[in-house]
Length: 194
Image 1 (cartoon, rainbow, N blue to C red):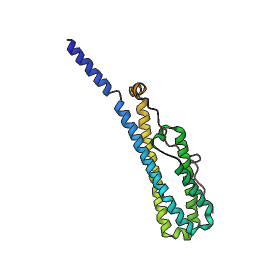
Image 2: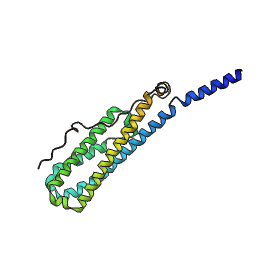
Image 3: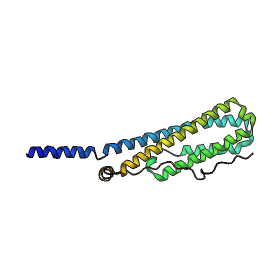
Image 4: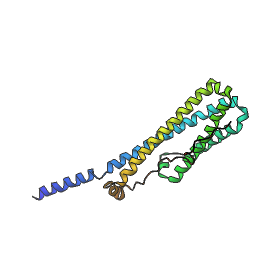
């Protein structure tokens, strides 16, 4: 009888551990890290394209140095931020990263307006090819951000629901991750003036 009771207790412990969410939370945290890696890769792709784009535009729009300088400065700011996988656990570093990327997006928007102003620049095949690449990269960044936010939502939910919350509190001590948020003023459409 005692042996049967011990087996029942052992089975109860095994099923309790299996249902505590430990593995789920670990898997979800790894998904957040992987999604963040995809965000970094998309930003790196954009960062790698910028010098080529700037060089092509310089050749055609010498009188738009301010815009080109803003792009170069924004790229430098983005490059100065070390964005490792640990950044998703540090809200201040994450905010600095988002601010630098917003600065880059703003500078690139102004650069694309330059292309609209100067038809000979827009007609240049090299610029058009780079512009297509840049637009594709911006789309990839958006997709990567969206997937990251989904992974963050799943992770944050998994550490808050019962019984996972108990497992997290007692064993893992995982903290919620910050999702990407819309940039300030994003609710207003940008105005293009010539």
